[in-house]
Image 1 (cartoon, helix red, strand yellow):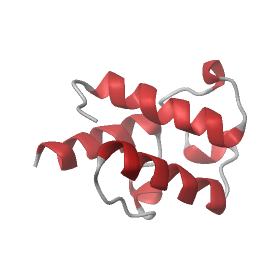
Image 2: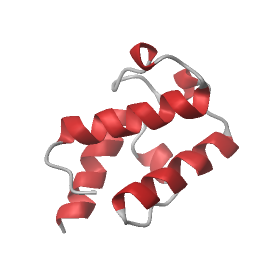
Image 3: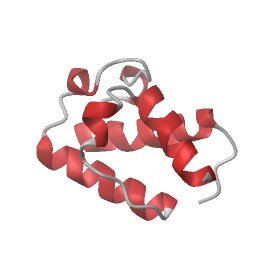
Image 4: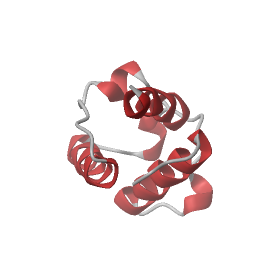
Length: 83
């Protein structure tokens, strides 16, 4: 998937988080900590797998600790896609 902007990636990640957690998309905000969405370790792995498939890159589960919000996570992924 060719991403044009950080906002597109935030939308993609937010949609997958909503899907994995059964929350409404309106409840997913990019500056909240991952834990606030109720993601467990299994949901997190599914989230990473879906993103890897969508974006065509490998992601490390430890990124959730290094980039604790959808916004910081998305910004980092963009740097990976651009390099």
